[in-house]
Structures are given as C-alpha cells and as structure tokens.
Image (tube, rainbow, N blue to C red; front, top):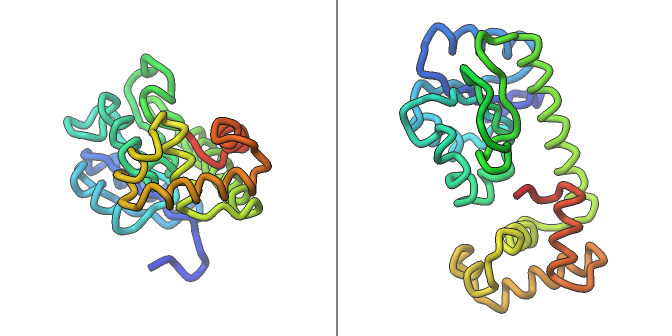
Length: 200
C-alpha cells in the first residue's frame, strides 16, 4: 500500500547489495518511498505488483532489463511505457533515449546530488504529462489506443493487443480525437505526443 503521506514511490533494481543499500538510504532520506530488487525477475514482479512512480535500474545487469531489450519490454505494455526509467551505467550509452527505452541516465561513480536532481526532474515531467491527460480527460483505454496507433499499429492489431473488439478501438480513438480537437487519428497522435500525453 502507498504510504500515508503519499510519497512518490521509487523502485531501485541493482544486484550489488552495498550500492543498492546506499541508493535506497539516500532516496528514502530525500522523502521518497523506496522499493528494492536484487534481480531483474524481482524487479519485473515489483513493477507489475507495486506500479512504482519511477524506476532506477542498473544498466549492465545480465538480464532482460539491460539496454538491449528494455525498449522492447516497454513497448510490450502500455503501463510500462508510462513509468520513467533512469539507468545507472558505467559509461554514456550509445544511442538515443528513445531507441534504448529509457528516460535518463546517471553514470558511475554516482553523483548522488545529480541522481536526486534527475529523479525530481523526471517525476515532475511525468506528473505534468499525467495532469495534462487528466485535464483533457482521456481515459486509460483512449490513451492506450493512441499509444499503439503512434507505434504504427492498425485497429485490428490494437484490438488483438488490448483484447477488445475492433469497433471498441475505433470508438476509443474517435473519442480521443474529439477530446483533443483533432480531425484525424494522425493529428490526434501528434497532439498527444506534443502534449506528452503519450510517450513513444
């Protein structure tokens, strides 16, 4: 359950126990609720069960959450795509944040002040995106349908992904177009991306 003071929840996935303890202590003392995981499997389970507000992840873990596959993982589930990911890495990653599937990174040795600044910045941007979506009043199904449209999926493909009839998908997209003041699916996607309602 969430803490009574509604602290933002940060999940840290790190297989080095000493590093994990240091980061967890720092983040907790900065006013966040901290969840920890020592492996990718444990991290994935906690993402699914706890829905953290942000994930700190060791980039070079020999598992699914490394740079090579995180983009695929985030593309596979709408809820994963909306959680900010910050990677902890030994070197500056080669490639764009979009292609590698993360929002930001902090290099080792970790500058803890920079880490906290990065956490605050990413949580603020995520909160802003969520506030815009609430103000426009797009529901979860409308956001999901737009997100998959932005990723090049057809209504038939989105229907299979979301396990819903095609007519429902078209209804979600038509509603999103109306709420966003768009005249087409393409325009609705462009507006949603520009307003940070969805992230590719």
